[in-house]
Each structure stands twice: as C-alpha cells, then as structure tokens.
Image (cartoon, rainbow, N blue to C red):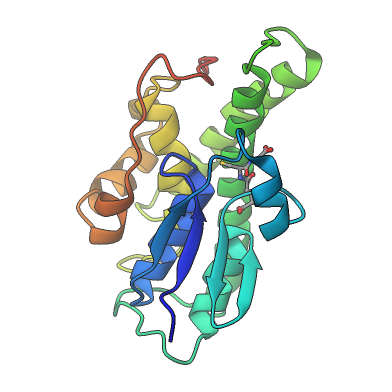
Length: 215
Ligand SMILES: N[C@@H](CCC(=O)N[C@@H](CS)C(=O)NCC(=O)O)C(=O)O
C-alpha cells in the first residue's frame, strides 16, 4: 500500500494536528509540502476549499484536521498509542467542546495572521473581534484546565493536540505569555517531550506575521 501523505506546511497548526494524529495512531505519514500561497491551483485540485491539511490514503482524500483525526481513529490498521483517548469515549462531549474551543483559538490566530499579509490590515473591527475572542478563549480554556487536564487525566487526545499546536504558534511568535494561563502552561509542559509533539514542532519566531499581542 502507498505511504500515507499529509499535504501542508510545517508551521500550519492544523497540518501539525493531522501529523500528530498520524503518529499517535501508528502511521508513518509523509509531509508533502504545499506552497499554497505560490501555487494555489495545486491546492484547489486537492481540496476545493483551498486549505491544508489534506490527507491522502488508500484512494481517499480527507480534508480538515479534525476529520483526519476521526478517519485515523476509525482506520482498521491504526495502532493507537496506549494513552490515546477515543473521540467517542466516556468524555466525548467534553472532548468535543474543548476541541471546538481550541480550534476557535487556532482560527483566530490564522485570521489575524492573514490580515497582516501584504497589504496589511492593522485596524478593522473584525481584527479587534478576533483579538478579543482569542483572549476570551485562552481564559476559558485555562479555566477548563484548572484541574490539570483539558478532558481527562493521563490520556492524550484531539483537544490537547489542538491546544498545543494553537498555543505553540502564539508562544513562539511571542504573541502571548503562556504563564498568564498557568493551567494550559502545565499541560503544554507535560506533553512537550511526547514524540508526536516534539517531532512535528514548527519553527515560530517573534517577527513572523500574526503578532498582535493579547493583553
Ligand atoms: N479547519 C481546518 C483549517 C485549515 C486551515 O485553515 N489551514 C490554513 C493553513 S494554517 C489554510 O489552509 N489557509 C489557507 C487560506 O487561508 O487561504 C482544519 O482544521 O484543517
């Protein structure tokens, strides 16, 4: 069978979620880098929505990191890490809500980043709304995590992966001080040496676009 492929970029947080999913479910997926800003048609052919990641496996093309996670969870030849949490487990609704909030956090980052591309939009009501939403989400997620976990202790799942990918981009670009969110900081610390997290970490640095700080 052909090797599983994930199309995306190393710094794209949702692409990273898909790559984490592949590793957590025991697959050796190849990252096929896609310069979608330069060659948008190539991406539209793969995904009509023009977004990464997309996964190619066994004749299937799957869009969206959350759906990719679900696909891999249900794939017959997946061999999940023993601490991986099922999306349909006993805490499925807490997982669903936590994952949704983490995705919203991730999306606010991408909207703000997009607005800073040339020509940059530095003031716009929607930009302000996204910054406000981001602050609110960080506080809400930190509250959710006040017992030391996002969904369930000693397990790792979609919500944790998305929170880590969304906040890695913000921490690396110095948009937030993660110690303002001590419970999230604790979870991030716990998982920083987990193989799927460490191997897929993108390179984020302070002057990358998308740095409207959260106060
Ligand atoms: N909900 C999607 C979001 C994917 C997404 O927005 N990816 C960004 C890259 S980080 C993208 O493809 N952006 C293209 C664009 O905004 O035109 C997922 O989780 O996969």
